[in-house]
Length: 410
Image (cartoon, rainbow, N blue to C red):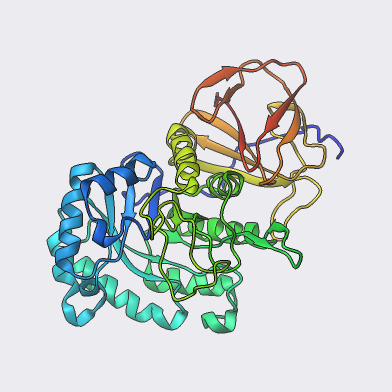
C-alpha cells in the first residue's frame, strides 16, 4: 500500500445532527434488546444490566401492570426504558392512556412500536405514534428499520433509499434506527463482513443528516441462524464502525438469550450475554461489558459529535463508500500496509478527532504513523490522554479496535 501524503484539508461537517432528541443525559444510548426477562424483574437483575454498561432496557411486558413494576425498579436502579406492552400497540386499548401514565416517569425514554416494518405498515405506525404523542409529547416513538439487504419488493419500495425516504416523510421520526448484522460465514464457514454493511451505514448516516436527526445502530450479541457466537473483535468492529459513522445509540441484540422454536444447536438463539436456561452470565456478557465501559469512557469523542468525513483505506474499499485519498492534516504518514481501516474525522465542541477502526475482527494490525505536530494527543480506550512522539512509529490496533487522535480546533 502506497503511503498517502496529505495535501489539503478543510473541516466541512457532512453528517450534522442539528436537532437532537433528548435521550440518555449526555451519553450515547446503550440499549439492551430483549433485556431483563419479565419473570426476572428484580433490582438484582436490573443492577446486573447496569453493571454491564447499559443505560436503557427494552423488554416486552405482558401487560401494563408488569410494565409498571419494571418501571419502578428501573427508577430505583437508574436505567431508562423503551416501553413495550400490548396496550401500547393496540389502538383499541387506548395507547394514549399508557403515554399519559408514563409520560412523566423519569425512567421513560421512549415508546417502541415495531421492528423491521414494511412500507404498508407506515400509515398505521404514524397514526399510532400520533395517539401516543397526544398523551406524551416529551418522548419519542421508536421504530427499528430493515437492513439494506432486505429485498425492495418485500419492503414495498422502489429501493432501500426510497424505503427510508417514505418512512421519514410519513412517520417524521425523532431518530433513525436500523439493524444489520455484518459478520457471516462464507460457503466454507470462514467469517467475513457483509460487503454492503458500510454502504448501509453510509445511506443511514446521510438520511439522518438530511433529516437533522441522530441514528442508532446494532451489534449482534446473541448467536442464531447463520450468525456466530460473537467474539470481542466482532463486537468491537460493529460498535466502533457505528460510532465512527456518528451513531448516537448502540443496541445489542439480544441481552437475554431469546427463546425460540428452533432446536438445532447450531442455529437456535444461543450464548447471549445472559443464558435463558441457566440464567447466568456467559463470556459474551463480559465482552459487552468491556466494550460498554470503553463507550462510556469515550463519550467526549462520540457523544453529540459532528462527522466531518468517513473514508476507507486499504486493499478493499467497500461499495458505496469513499476511499481515503487525502490524509487528515495532522499526519505526515499514515500507512496501514494494505490493512482495511475506516478513517473518520469528528468535531466535538472545540476538539477535533481522527478515529481509525481496524475492520479485521480476527487479527491485530500495525499502522505506521508520523504526526506533524506534538500538539496532537492520543486517546486510549479508557479515556486517558497521552502524548505522542513526532517520530515515525508503528501502532498496533487490536481486532476490530480503534486508534484515536485529538487536537484543538484553532
